[in-house]
Amino acid sequence: MSYSFDTIIDRRGTDSLKYDFAAKRGLPEDVLPLWVADMDFTSPPEVLDALAEKCRHGIFGYSDAADEGYFGALAKWYSERFGWLISPEWLVKAPGVVFAICAAIRALTEEGDAVLIQQPVYYPFSESVHANGRRLVVSELVYSDGKYSVDLKDFEDKIKSEKVKLFIICSPHNPVGRVWRIDELSAMGEICLRYGVKVVSDEIHADFVYPGNRHQVFAAISPELAEITVTCTAPTKTFNLAGLQISNILISDPALRSRFRQEIRKTGYSQPNIMGLVACRAAYEHGAGWLDELMAYLGSNLDFVRDFLAREIPQVQLVEPEGTYLVWLDFRALGLTDRELDDLIVNKAKLWLDAGTMFGASGTGFQRINIACPRSILERALRQLKDALDSIGAAR
Ligand SMILES: Cc1ncc(COP(=O)(O)O)c(C=O)c1O
Image 1 (cartoon, rainbow, N blue to C red):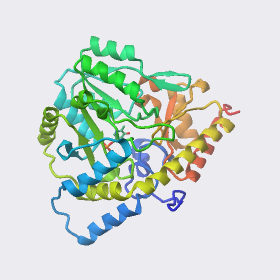
Image 2: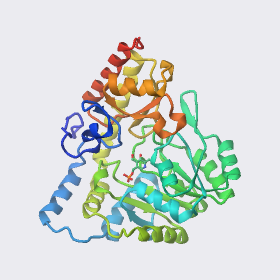
Image 3: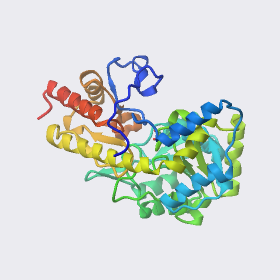
Image 4: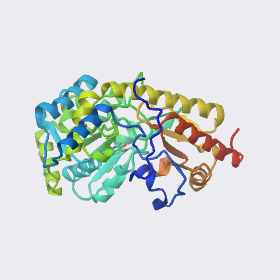
């Protein structure tokens, strides 16, 4: 390892959403935070150097991204990692993926139209649908034998009966950790094509895939699917740049793209944040080696969690993730209500996780834990969890 993912970097007092806002959000000051999806690791050194170089230059005027440099780096990343060939005109830059999802909802549907999501899922999906005055339709993922899958019959029935206009897919899936296979994506895609449903494919976690799995870009499956799809990508999860607010939205169909662009224009957003541009380009140009080591580290963090739970608190089940650094834990064997479970996590274990119910009603009895932190922090968190379970007489 040439990067030191074990190093603990004090993030308190840095205006960090993860570390500095517990009291403001009604939690005890001393909770250990493993909730929001950013990492406790510094970004690749090449990214830090590029940002420092920009600071030294000292001028932060209006900026935009050139095709050769910025787009070239993005195109090379997607072609080499995912076999997806993209063209410069497909790119619409946005300050974030959630911003783009909201814009896509407005661009591709009318008020009152039905938008389908698959819960349990990243909660801004449902919030974005509601905030934009659209009707939320949920096709629940099915949890069976320790694995989540799509109920294709329910998916189709809901699309048909609710006259769904837009499907927002989370791929790879936060929080259940599925890396959807091509046959699963194709089956959902065929149904969308049959009923004239447009697709927003949120692929922000595409780079976090554990060995034995492969991320398939939804729009790359066929020209027909490309025509109906808005693909949301960003370097911000992969390289820990969320605060720099940059995302790359790729839309190959000119008509779809023009509707989306129009919606972005209405918000008044034009040029992206210069630091986001600089970091994104440097990350895609030079960050591959760092990412490989990060994935190995996350893989061993995952092994650690799996072993710890099996050995110390077997009542808590790990839902084995195929991708992402967000791990979905099943506490249902404890027989607690959601309120009791939250009390256990927050007040007894002194942890700040994301409660399963935030991701939809089917998240009841689950919690999401972010494992992108030094192993010693993860170990502390799991020990606190075990002590809390001991305190209520629930651990073995
Ligand atoms: C699936 C998914 N989409 C989008 C985001 C946020 O993206 P952004 O910060 O670009 O809005 C996250 C962050 O956790 C996420 O998990």
